[in-house]
Length: 65
Image 1 (cartoon, rainbow, N blue to C red):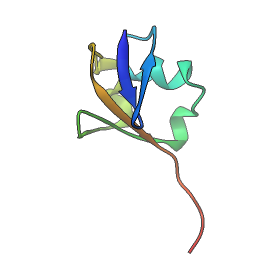
Image 2: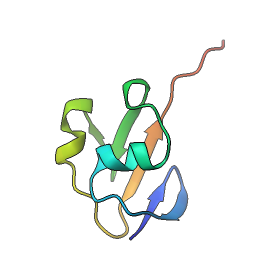
Image 3: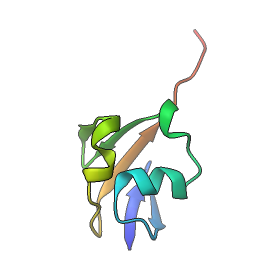
């Protein structure tokens, strides 16, 4: 299915947000997520089903100043 991840259109196999994070090689413990501009808490990711055209943001922490 085609979705947009961090502004880039991607073809993915995952059907839920938790699986997508693993598919894209992110560490689930160290990211914040949103689907279609709605924040998704870590414990709710497995329940968050993805659909064609969804817009997903996966954010990792950065250090700096």
